[in-house]
Image 1 (cartoon, rainbow, N blue to C red):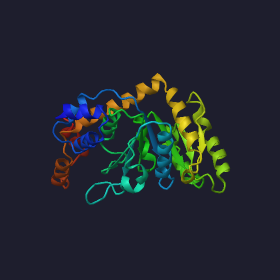
Image 2: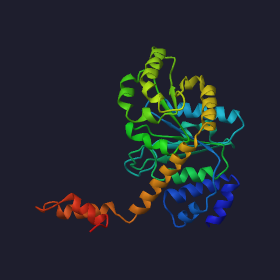
Image 3: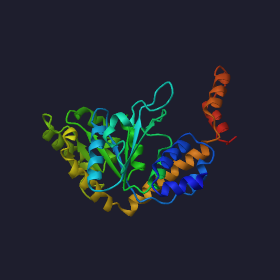
Image 4: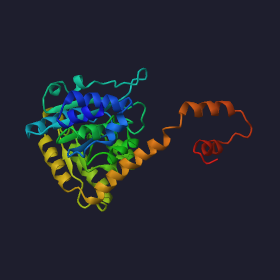
Length: 301
């Protein structure tokens, strides 16, 4: 089964790609064999992140337009909040980007976080690699925007775009230990609002200590996404950033992905439900010790 799917994916068969994503997402039998035979992809992976309300979806929609205008093929993976009832995505791709839904050069898939604290889907690495095998030029991963814990996008994307708005002064202060350090490009969206220029100036001052850790200054681009303003500059900056992706950065990206996969493999036989049962049965024991229980499940005793 996986051989046929892989053959179709390599031919840019969107239906086969969609079926394969469902296979991986739900861990159906055979999905691991499919992953073991994936060819290396060539797509540039763009992560779009930032606080809620910054206009990430509108920006993504406009960026798709810029990529299509260049004659390139693009896949969009939208990671949405989970429904507390069925764990599926609350927001739908047809509603958010309806103009691209039937475009032959665009593939859109909505995924639910399924409770993941990083703002991404638990299988986001595998799904992104699957999409990468389908001969796309760009893959955009748009995250939920849950805040500081969302920094795991930096371990997935070649280029991480952090989107903020002029009123986000206080939020930016709280993000300094997280999102501020992972940005390859900052986008100040809704830049037609008052004090946008002042915000950009202050953002540059806040980023000054980080510049010493980068080979060059982090670009800050002003956009008005709903009017398609600034999006061509953003596209050009993303392309130029990719060409300057250092060997160290590539090694780091791959190391992060491998680390996550090893963690999953090591943890797959450990049941959260079983742990909860052990805790419940021992909760009132006078000699209950959390760390002894950890050692038990870690196979150290």
